[in-house]
Image (cartoon, rainbow, N blue to C red; front, side, top):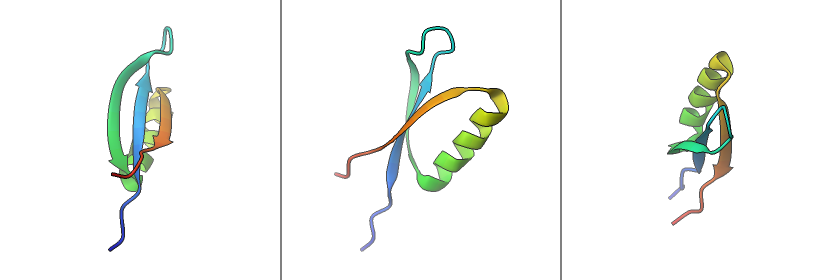
Length: 52
């Protein structure tokens, strides 16, 4: 059984860089979120999620 890699995406506030939202997503969703953020200039922090 193959486990899907999961990532934590943290949206960062433009003013002070604090976390403004959090999402756990698979690789395909990360790609979509990154593309949308690139279009709007949104700042993101993306890191692997520990497996459970």
